[in-house]
Image (cartoon, rainbow, N blue to C red):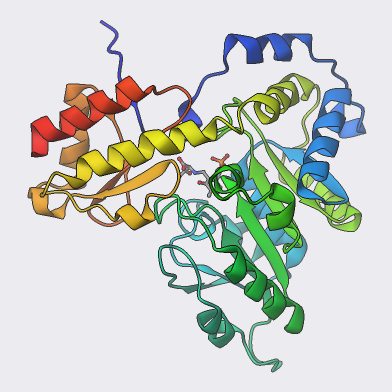
Length: 345
Ligand code: TLP
């Protein structure tokens, strides 16, 4: 028997819609390692324009996008300053050290947002016996903090600091689109502060595969070489790029619906006293649900929810995470909330 689970594990679980598949089927393709896939080239130009950058590069995953950018910005032994809960530090299998030989310098943010004074303190004096602070990396929205948005003023100040210190500035914008629809700030405005930006097409936008790196022409040419080294040179990738293009054209504005669903879900769960919810952190499509007061371990909570038909994942410490996306309806979210009420209310 197949169970129809309400899948709130991630916005990565979405499946291409019939219209997206249609666009994929019609895509013109060529060999992208030769730079000859017309659909990939159009997608890259489109993302470069959207982000106001000179050039862009299509890559298979968000992890590879981030790792290529780190590689371009750094030399082995350099330090990269980042927030303690960020994806780069927690969920990329130690690739920073494995692939680039860099040392992460982590600082704790407030709801994932690094404070300018803390970043200042983390920057090393320029002494030959100390690591070079080569790069500052920001994640917007911040996944592990619960989809929180970086204030643009903080980004501006961090940008100014990186200019004064001659450091690179990278944005992990896997969910930048969510921040944009929520704040009304354009992708271009956010991206203007960064030397490199990585964005995902396969999270809330619903494409099956793909991320894009954007930056200066020089940056992207270096990135192209590392994409090949990291095994990300694809051939007739236009069939996938077409899905990405469809996602950009059709699925950005609708992210607002995912945010509305999540705000509803957050409010519902806030009424359950054994759960800990920080509603101020519920800004987009993610929620971190503290389960310490249920008397259960997060793994048990996940199993209980699954038995009732709702799938979630682990959050950070003593918590579970839910994410809304285009394949869960408001009715699904209402059902998931009632499962929580039933189990923990
Ligand atoms: N995040 C995934 C998991 O890896 C945790 C998820 O389910 O949220 N940056 C950010 C901010 C991300 O959240 C993710 C994926 C990535 C990069 C990596 O993207 P992929 O999965 O395409 O390598």
